[in-house]
Image (cartoon, rainbow, N blue to C red; front, side, top):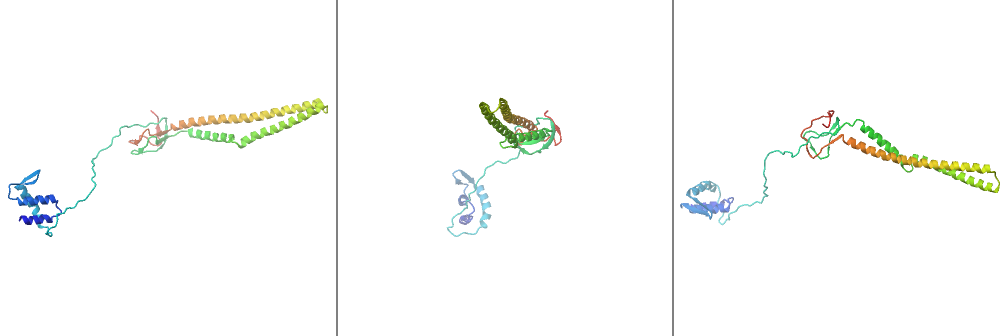
Length: 267
């Protein structure tokens, strides 16, 4: 009986070899009170009987294998992923109530409850009233000033053309005066003719200086106006920025207390 069981144990190749060896030894010593399995374990006769009860039905279903067949078992390598699974919720460490910096009507609401937001993201806009129109007007004025200051612009051509004409008139008056001065020295013309030429020369000289001064003054005024416009535009843009509500931190919107069209204030 022990030999038959041993043969059938060898046929159960899906069982670990250590278990098969242990079963063989258990069957050989089935009439002993106890038997040693490993250096670390011992079982009594009741355990042997339990083993036989579990193994005999399996052995009866297994065909005999050829003599000399080695005990076999299959080994498969798999990745073992260790993890801890559970349920719960995340509580934010910081919650803030976002309020506008100015009073006004909500013209645009860009988030809803549950939305994720980044720090600095626009979440709402307040109606700026006439500030946007004012800013647009300033920008148009700035564009006009910069166009007039541009080299080759019609405005500068007009002023510079006037200077060129006055300079040409001055040069003609100067040459006429010098000729008459030479003629007067030779006694060809009277003194009154020389004085008239000198008077016209002084007038042409004053007109040229006036035209040149006008050109410089107008360019200086335009440069000053451009600087003032840039400062006013920057100030107005900062004011308009206060009507834009931004998220102070990254996170999730828990609740929205207003709707578009509602009146809000910083308090």
